[in-house]
View 1 (cartoon, rainbow, N blue to C red):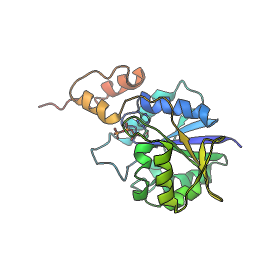
View 2: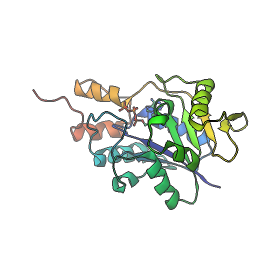
View 3: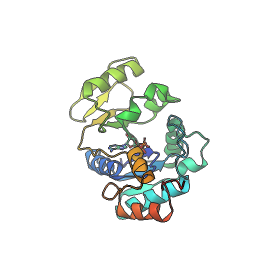
View 4: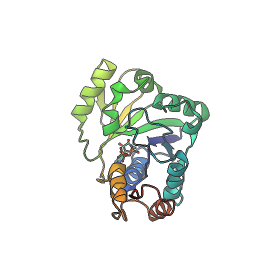
Length: 219
Ligand code: ATP
């Protein structure tokens, strides 16, 4: 069965940290496609005021336009807000016949107990949890968290690089190379007039400059 990896995020703005992990997971999980899904409104993020959905989607499209197999979804635009992941995955499961794998960094996944509908989410689709610099994780930490959330210890399946329980979707665990880049840091650099070159695609840098996004506030 063909597989699609779902990569949700604020992408405010998209950067090479996101793109690199998507590239690695594309091969690691043998995906036919990575679908990037910008959040219309994140429930668990500080309302620092992400730039308009339209701009975040446009930057995403520019970032991936040369990469066959990567595409952007605007599905959260039309879903109720805030954008709960469980609603998005439910909606996407109705739309796609392919196997869907939800990909998430450990910094987000570590908050899973606070996610609305997390039990349903874990029952709905396989997940791939990956490491991100600054949110160090190892298999043992992840196993402990999964045991707490599911209420039963999973078995590690080395051939699949995934945790399993009977009658439940797998949780893949991926520890690849990771780039120490965050959107928060990019926004801070832009707000103070510093360079962000080589941290994100040049087309995205040009777009956000032209549109005056994240620019220093005039005094
Ligand atoms: P912010 O700094 O605004 O919180 P962010 O850089 O964390 O933003 P998000 O759009 O919130 O970016 O991230 C979406 C997903 O991408 C999350 O699952 C997150 O773990 C992952 N991610 C973000 N940056 C990196 C990175 N440098 N390496 C690997 N994964 C990343």
